[in-house]
Picture 1 (spheres, rainbow, N blue to C red):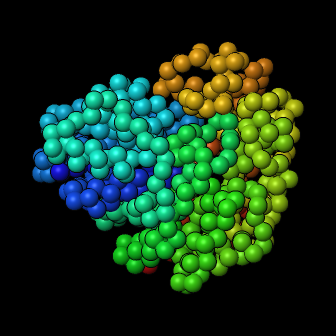
Picture 2: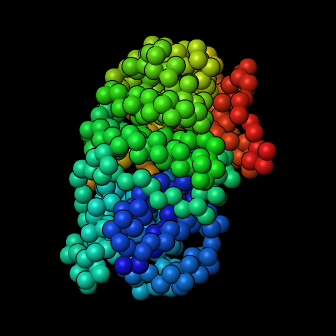
Length: 455
């Protein structure tokens, strides 16, 4: 079966992110004997002419479209991506008679609504590797599913989770936008953050990939693709079960020191673990605090306090590892008093960059959505494809925006709105700087690894 896979993502700030999920789907199809071509809409310059040309040359039997995000979850500068998916579907229809199947994390959040909106034939909700292989195999025999939405429970484990089939041409585009290559070490999330869809998409249990395979991916990316910076895409890298330590130990064993970054929970870290991270190349840690006071942290379902945030930040700083924090104001329990407390807490964080959001994007089937229904902010069963943001009842939006703007005005390492520096960071990537680059915002932080691609 000839399978043409399209990454529909059009977001490229603060830097472009390689379509890892698409390439893992490609790997599963290839391993099962199907012929696969990957096409990246962003890397093609968002060109429908290029898409049309690739479709005609390949002449696919089925077309898979991956949806990474629905929108940019930024209340102050909203950007929606589903219309672009609809346009891609129309172009495929114009060029090919192949059946179109949707997938990806963005699609799985609200599959029925998106499938109806963009007009594709089928959609896979959840973990797609096994289901897409079955879909293609059945299609080769002229057998098509009765249901338009095909659902999967998160069940793949260890070696069942494939290494991505990285596409060299596509990868070169992303390496030119920061030299960052993506690797996944595990799936699933045990945490119960009220606004988050990760447990719904990947399951509420940790399912680590095979350690050897993960580190093989890193060596492959650096040796054969020229990647100079690795980003681990896990929802939380430092899982409580310590699977991340096995990855680090294998990296140390193979003497890997390629710069890398990941998302971290500000809890459960110690000197031994962070020293091992530094030794294996950790340059920048992105911290998922999300709220800035003990009151709002608890309301969001967090298991840690702001003291944990301070201590984790200090531990990374001890090993000269840059940190970035992401904070959302107007969460449940937010008042004028917690806003002021939170601002002061954020300003008290030394040697870090902080990105401040206002409001929380409400996603279906999350505890936050249930609370929003209870508080009358949305209706039960409401279509949430058009973004709706949670703003704590009784908190005036204009007061909050004005207060945050004034509080962080002129503070280089506290960024509000959170996308205020996207264009500047993207420009630096074009000049050849590698990595996250937000570490350059930190006062007194000497930027390391500033080598340009042509050096």
